[in-house]
Structure formats: structure tokens, C-alpha cells
Length: 293
Image 1 (cartoon, rainbow, N blue to C red):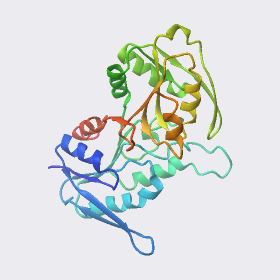
Image 2: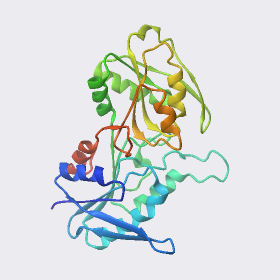
Image 3: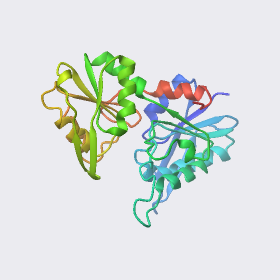
Image 4: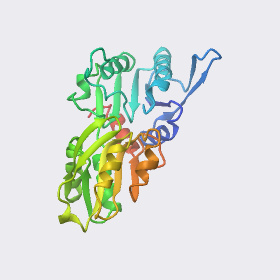
């Protein structure tokens, strides 16, 4: 049975590429506000008797989540055999412990809400830190896909003699896997966070790689402070480049980050002018395999 791909508004481009690759039917989700501010949701496409995949990157989760739940419930009520969430970017992974008395552990709460609404979850490189896997958070089957091979292939094709640079210790696995795939050297910087927008970074001796182009790689660009400070520490090297998976770029982060690099490139998990690396083929393959890793 042909699957039905339903994008929430803002996700139409990614969903169209996904539907074409997995030979699914592309539907639509109509949303608007009633005069009192409540959400109206209508599905365009018949879910009866087939799997439904709702596509919604969650870069702005608070404004999207109620419509997402209403769309999922409507699909189920209208006869979908299963209702899956395809979230190229998955939100609410940051608050993974109670740092101060009284704080909500929002990653757990959000996982509970998603698990109560969908049958399966498909995402790309969630920001796992203290949680070992999505399975430790979510009560539904999850498929976690990894963009590093796609980033590596893009770097190999577009950057001569790269030096892969991880901006902090968390990026060590990233930098190492990308460098290994393309046979390039890698270094990892040491970051000390002073607040949401303040970081200090220590840089090892880079003199052995003066003839190479530094390419900073990271999973998420949000405030952009880590990337900006890291770029400033590469003085004396060739003009640096930057490749990230999730291009959130909150507030004025894009202006700051783009001014520090010769080129900034991202995947299309979050729509942004920097998108150059398509991940729809990666997600389409997972859908065709039944959302199994």
C-alpha cells in the first residue's frame, strides 16, 4: 500500500523529495487560526488503510506541536494503519537533567508526549548527551540516522586538503568519523562554557597543518558562539569553512557565523539559505526499510 506523506506547513520541500524517493503520495496539512487563537487542522489526502508519515522538522517546536498532534490524531481517526513522525531535527534534547531545583526535565516530558501520539519516530542526529539513545527516552520504536557520511562526502568533493576541526569535546566522534571516511587529519578543540552565549576555547598546536583548509564540523548551530569563537582561534590558517547538520541559527547567529567563515554549509534538516546537503535520500531509505536502523 502506497504510504501517505503529510508535511506540516514549512516542510513541503523536504516532504516532496521524500515522497518522490519512496514512491509515496504527497498530501498536505492545512492549518490556520480561529479568531480566538485556537488551531484549525485539515488533512488533504486519504489515510484510510495505509501508513501515514507526518513530516515536521522541530526547529520551532512550541508553535508547531499542537498542530502536529491534531494532524496525527486526525490521520489515525481516518483509518491510517500507522502514524509516524518524520522529524529531521528533533527538539527538546537539551534539558536532559535537573540542573537547578524545580526545573522541568523537558526532554523526558516531550518524549512522553510524542510517544503517546505516534507509532514510530524517525530523526537525524538528535543531540544525545547524557541519554545513551532515544530508546532511553521514547516509548515507541525510533530510528536515528546519521549525517556524518554525507558531510564527509560533501567535504571531500568541495574542499581540497581539508583539516577536520571539532569545536569541542562533544564533537570528537563526529570529527573522527568524518576524517576517517575521507582520509583527512582531524583535531578537536577544548571548550569551556560560561553561559548560554559565552564560551572559552583552547586550541592545540596547528602548525603541522598550515597548508590545509580547516573545516569546522558540528551537529547544531544555534547561538553560533562556539563556531564564532573557534573560527577566531584559527588565525594563521587558511580561511576556515564550516559544515553543520542542523542550521538553527537563532537571532543574529547567522550574520555572526557567516562573517567568520569563507563558506558555511548545512544539511536540509532545517530549511535555511545554507542548505547544500540533501538528506531526503537517507530518510527515504529508512522509510522503505520500515523505520528500522
